[in-house]
Image 1 (cartoon, rainbow, N blue to C red):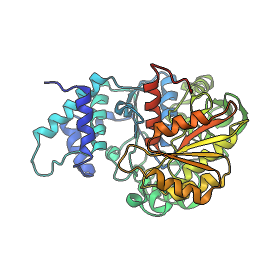
Image 2 (image 1 turned 120 degrees about the vertical axis):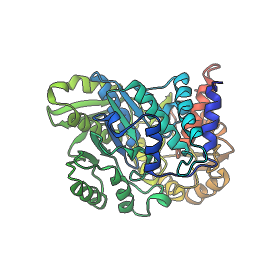
Image 3 (image 1 turned 90 degrees about the vertical axis):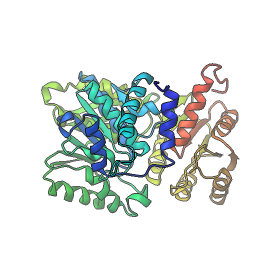
Length: 443
């Protein structure tokens, strides 16, 4: 009997309670059982890693390729509300029926090898990756944009050794318990996606991490191309977003508009533009097409205006918070700024809170509990905020209550900002979806 979408989703969520990380050879075994070989996606894969910005780069690059007339499969993580967000075709999450078909295909392979030596159950992430590859094998898009889940070297997405391009975005301190306690160690894990003779585009920030990437690229005979502030420049901030210029390989300088106040997206969009210009010859890249694709690109949960003067950002580590604060400074607000915050316990949340308070941008803090086993208790977070700030701090058991309180407190010229965790972002988005029918009057 065919399972329902809800049943499939419940099973995948349950995997986290018993499955452990497997090797790349194990992932290859499952792919081969699904009829997928190294050559299946030859000339199609673009592999993206990094600490911050990799999801945004996947989104911009997907939209740029779509605008040029290609069909694109995009595998991302995490999702905000719906699990299907992770598996995208032409930047739309797959329908429930296709999700269930792929789920059944993977389950059949698992059941066929149950109890056999070396056939271990895939993890939550590996299961969804296998589903995505099964769908992409059936649809065969022109390009596949694959975002790593964690690190790069040992990530399930690194199972293919012949992508057409690799991209590594900004590298910071995150997931240190798995990837290492220095940026250099983390960079070495990210550099694991660099493949023999495959061009690399990377974000240049720190000499230490750059050296790690360049050493690996040299070893792999992979030509490397840097993205830094010599490639782009902010030109104007309007009431609709950010204008910036990009130094094209083909057309000198081109002006672009970002439909966001996220200043960090200039860097991510530029990395995507450079990637496009490495994938396609000049005659297939038109400035007007690129300009429209960038202007129309919206990435949920990244300085997203979810309602009038309500901004949602998924920054969840110290570097991400720094970029978020830079974006807040760019945004003109006549009144006060109210912050809704939560975080999970494997982040450097004391440092994040200190950054937020030290910026002196917010007059009120609404601390939320989140429905995840790793969520930090709202009272504990409140105590840290009150240690650093003399401003008003309130704590709430869940995101919905904190969000509602922020909206009630907001005056006509005030703005609400939500940050700290993609789990928090997802819960806020879910609240908005639930309110769509009865439309929340506070928004």
